[in-house]
Image (cartoon, rainbow, N blue to C red):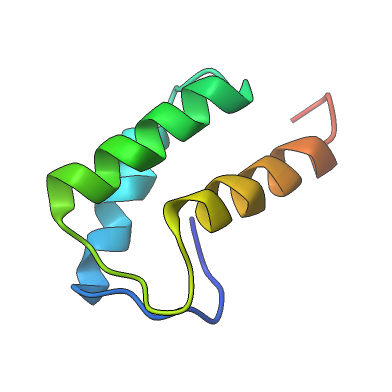
Length: 69
């Protein structure tokens, strides 16, 4: 589940990103590919942040996950 203080239009599009990321390899190129595809497919705008900001945030979460998750 992706939560934070960000603005996205349309706001409900974040659910699509969550679905698209399920089961994806956690390597950065794979995550980047999905996030970029999401931005293209959903035609979202995120004022004040970019797709790269989302990739960075997702990768920080992945790097902090316990190997036993």
